[in-house]
Image 1 (tube, rainbow, N blue to C red):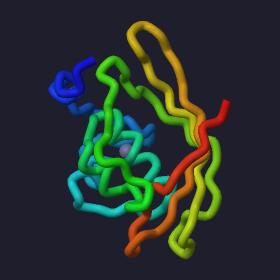
Image 2 (image 1 turned 30 degrees about the vertical axis):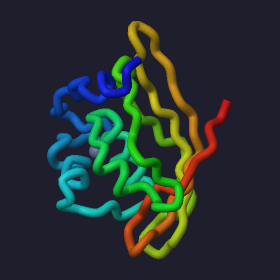
Image 3 (image 1 turned 90 degrees about the vertical axis):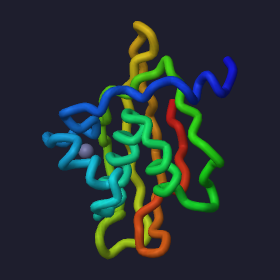
Length: 140
Ligand SMILES: [Zn+2]
């Protein structure tokens, strides 16, 4: 598909309930991070906010929460794919007194009429004091 056509695909409407799975309104939850009003307090919170950013297609947030060493030039959203639900399977370190953390998750999506999921073990580090995504291993 023509890459410019992909970029013109409108983002999904901003949801009332936060896509990250916490029982909160988007505006009060990941929306605060996306708007730059709050910073992630843990690697898990950053992971949740990045899932929500994929769901609402907030490219600037995804890029600034990505480590500069591994950050892509742009985020290539697939217009046919909707991120629907995040399951956190486990988290290691990534807290207030840590400089590194890991989060294992399963991200559920729908592509056309088909449901699928991505199982990933992600690594996060602090960069200039803020949690950022470093990289991840996709599982089976
Ligand atoms: Zn949220």
